[in-house]
Length: 174
Image 1 (cartoon, rainbow, N blue to C red):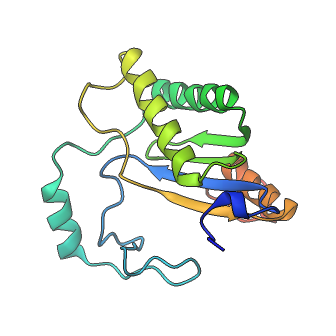
Image 2: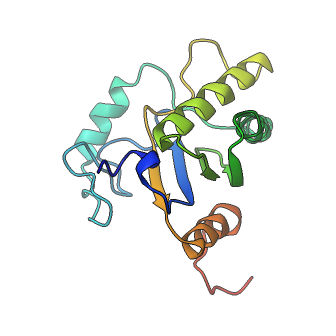
């Protein structure tokens, strides 16, 4: 059985998808990072490598992308529009200044394809609104796709997307 083919996952409820803006989290970053050889869920991220991060920053062809308040609204609206058009169930979306989180159910669609489509439409809508420059990348090449198998996992992901960016479950409001 192909673990990455959602058609083979009868009990799959949703995906927790995260993608970053172009140039905002580079290999070597002090927050940790992964590469193709070290990208297994549950394993630690690779340690900071400032020289590598500096090299990658120097190789960027454009400045890092940041979402303004108007862009964040446009991106979220575009994701809602794409999900509605595709008949995907969007449980939560949150466009931050340097990344986007979403929880979505998309029967039979691989999470990578969901991510590809929402990124493409968000870019298009941002450019059509005059909020982003033509030919300048808005998003990093890929992102994170987490399969959610239980209602508890879906609820935890929704909480994180909507309320938990800088908090932990059980924290009191301050």
